Length: 245
Image (cartoon, rainbow, N blue to C red; front, side, top):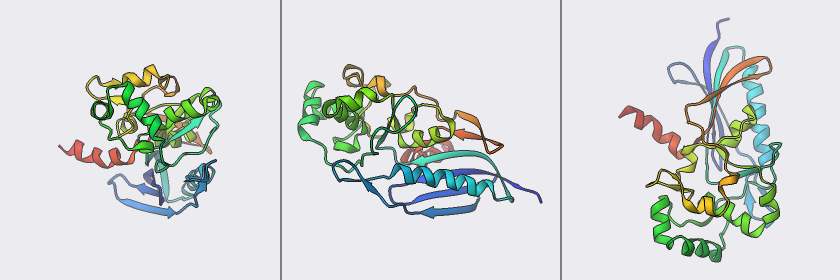
């Protein structure tokens, strides 16, 4: 039986977790969707259940590997990127995947804005409206201020798309499609991390930036596939239009 070469794309939203197989003509030839129950963080605020998400990813890969009509040549991830997964030096999560809807302490954000020219200037330089926890860089700043012990144990903070890639590659990398999307981390005029990221010690928790077209060859149960670094979902939706023009 002739197998169809496909690319597997995981589309991980807050509500639905989806998997698509696309053939060489970018037609969807297989898809599945699941809703995973949330858990809560230490403050009883709802958040993603990382363990269930990990199981969904790995079980889904086992399922499609068992489909004899398809040959999986590559895997990539599109996911919401407004939250970090905090990993130790062994790649083990140290904390919940905090919800970007979790209320943010105003005194912390006000303190940061005052130190770097005020809220309007800060928002302009980082292209990030003041949105509290939706600015994922501020989530890491909050941990540094409120939980210094946890902050000290963090080897890398990976945005969710890059964490999902890490599950298969074991590689710690950041990606500009996540960094550049309302994280308050990037200075768009200087085209580098904003000075606050360096001054406040955040930079040491961020993995090296890898080009979004970089892939890794990974062998999974005897079969090798190319694994992408993961993309922020909003950026992933925009990329085909940028290429078109």
